[in-house]
Amino acid sequence: MADSTKNAADELYVNGRIWTGRGREAGALAVRDGRVLACGEEAGECAGPGTRVVDLRGRRVIPGLIDGHLHAARAGATWTAELHWTGVPDVASALVTIETAVRDRPPGEWVRAIGGWHPCQFAESREPTRAELDAIAPDHPVYLQALYEVAVLNSAALRATGLDRLAGDPPGGWVERDPATGEPTGRVHGMGAFTHCLDAMAVPGADEQLRSTAAMFADLHAAGLTGIVDAGGFGMGPERYDPLFTLWRRGELSMRTRLFLSAVDPGQEQAQLDGWLRHARSRFGDGMLQVLGIGEVVHFGCHDFEGLEDFRISEPAAAQLYDITYATAARGWPMNIHAVLDSSIDVILDCWEAVDQLIPLHGLRFTLSHADRVGARNLRRLKALGAGIVLDDHQVFKAAASEAAWGPGSLDAVPPVADILAEGIPVAAGTDASRASSYSPWLSLWWLVAGTSLDGVRRRSAQHLFSRERALEAYTAGSAWLSFEEADRGHLRPGARADLAVLSDDYFTVPAARIPAITAELTVVGGKVVHSTGVVG
Image (cartoon, rainbow, N blue to C red; front, side, top):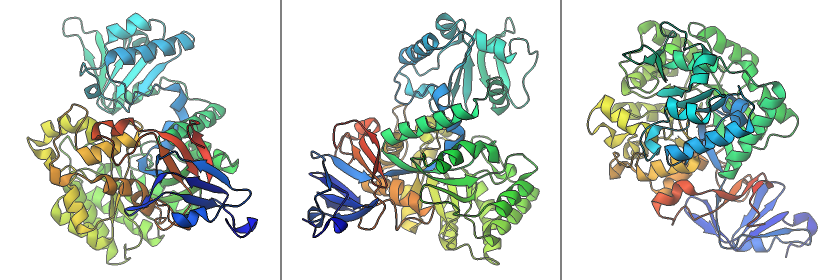
């Protein structure tokens, strides 16, 4: 029993299997003022008259998950207007979700599933067809975008977007047509086609974006997430962050959020990023919301997208990347940049090394996102710069397409986990949700430890699989490293922020195939409950 109420714990978690980080386990955890006070036997001595005791009933507890690459500001604005097909096993089940949405919405209102799913997750290995959609939603435009690969529209959506009347193709995309009639089949491809369709949908009002963003965070908390690093991305101008900052100012932001800020328009990268650098401050904010760095879209000419097509960074683009890197380093900001191919990484590191000769990058936490095909030479260069890698699970959907583009056996070391760890390079982990991947951290963790894609094929060799503990470290302390918070977050040692998740199943012992189904029974941020199923507490 604590000597006085002043020194007593606010909460005491008992009878659990608590992974505090770095291989350490405890049965109890004491929390005071939003931070870990003690763990193990010492925690029991912190109870006082006002301490709330939480019986964990033998459940597994982990530090709150931190998604190191999630496009939250973009996803949150329309979260409640979209269908989320994480874990949906077949086309029939997907169609049921559309039927349900149609019943709840007036005629003419869009029904959409924009990214986060792929036909390979369905038993039928295909997307729904225009005819199937017309049968269940004749009066609602339906738009289903499978990652950035293909989108399917029903007849009402073709009319709403004008694609039924378009003679050619939208710039930067193409419309599949029946070879006999020339009529659209309902399938479209390419960013230009996707943007054309998305532009036809009404933008939610400010109040709806606030409610939608809060609802998204509630869903993420239900998965055990207590923090995210927003990677910026396409089209993310300053106004896109208004809902996040409004929630923060109101004291209603429940997710610890760290922001990378991107260029918005091709050809304007230097001016736009200079605007961020001049008018914002790295690590401005508090424990809930902080501006962090520049990325992941640093220069459109350096963005190799999924790396499935021939791509080269031009000399003019590289020269501008050098200037942007210099300006970022001069301001002491981190940089995160999208790069899949080793050839892209090679040019990026040329720029980083040149700047490093003038302004040391060590300590600035420069990172690559994805780095699927990074080679041994460039890993050594990253190590020398003190740079890190943010891994994600987009290949859990795209592995077959990637292998088709890169050749047989090319996925053996995608990513080259053993080589990354051998170099001692800092590793964070995330999803790249919500369009390029699912938002589920457990699907991502399964991919990291099992190397199996949703088509049932394991293409990554055993030596390049993470252990369960090492993968969880990447998803906790590793992602905290991105924002200079690895001493404060991502573990449950005394003094750390009390961010934790009580799991529905034991991640460390459950059969690997069941990892994607794990959820959180209780999620806590800074000692405050942000999600509870009522099972514990």
